[in-house]
Picture 1 (cartoon, rainbow, N blue to C red):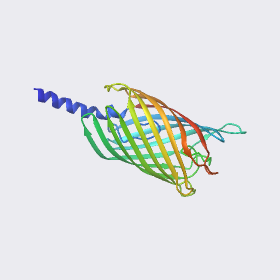
Picture 2: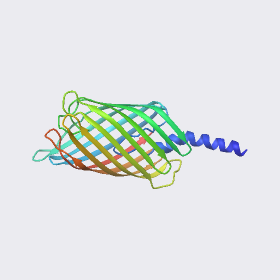
Picture 3: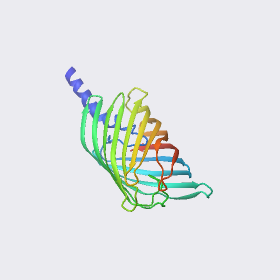
Picture 4: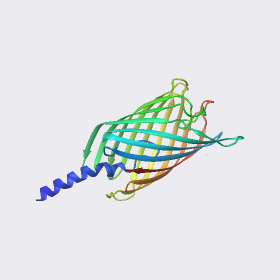
Length: 259
């Protein structure tokens, strides 16, 4: 009888693993954990970026769909508000992004999991040429990357390495993101979590031979199917050129709903 109860418990933990771990992806990065097949995620992550040339806000609407338990497709439609120094405020559409992810490796153990995901992000030139990476470049971009993540009940680590190709500009970028997640509450199901995040982004602009290192400190609250989050990001290292705007600070405010 004890063995039967134990087996049922193990099966229950495996069945719930996706939802327990899935709540709480990095705020400024990505994560290989996926939900079940036919799941939808509607989210936003507004960035308020202050630079030496002005302040810019990108408020995207993001919709993700999982056709299967190991695949995801999505679309990101950003609405951009720009305020250059000595100019009037302007509103426009940013660069629309088409996302696809495929999880090709997964190893689950009791209370922990490791996964690998291939990712591609196609950025369409729907925005103005404002030289705002990730917001509005006005150039076609093709990004391919690999995400590796380890999650346990005590902490989570996510890595992403990828390359962004821009055929019509000199802004090709080799990008690496590293995120550490620290839960402040004991695991619960249904999900109820408060997480701290410590996140880094390293960007080498290959053709320009320029480098940027960003750090973000964030907090995230998840309850059931709903999550809210906030983070502050600032540069640790950056070299500037006329093709890029020097950053001072970014504030991120986000939410997501799973159904």
